[in-house]
Image (tube, rainbow, N blue to C red; front, side, top):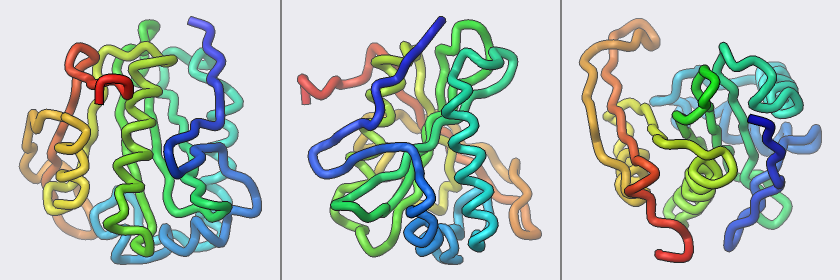
Length: 193
């Protein structure tokens, strides 16, 4: 599979694009917030962490999904709202020659909570998976205490498939994982919404 993605992605209100140096402070404003990171698989990030993470994102994007079919391929896009980064979405294509299974994730600034921006960005990420990336299945894994993300999964039409008990060691304690997913045949395309 040789794939060229048409980036950036545009939604009604957002531009989903690759990160750039000027985004560090915006990313730090929410990725450094302990409350935002409470249910995420990483602790609050400092400036050096954000800069390092951005470099990883750009390196993976430049390599493309064909670079190493024996490894997962992550793509992270920042959500730009009127010139300010307010969140980011991740698509991780799973290893294997078919690359037909993906995981999506998101993190957004609390300053834009309740406006539907995370849903808009996550929907675009799933559209990317089922469209140009040609996936068969898209899943989200989250801490079940993260009720906002669980509701977002519901809005995406994902089915709550599993609740894994105490399978993740986080901040000195075992926590649970909820798995939500949608299949290509179940996905409602933008033209049918």
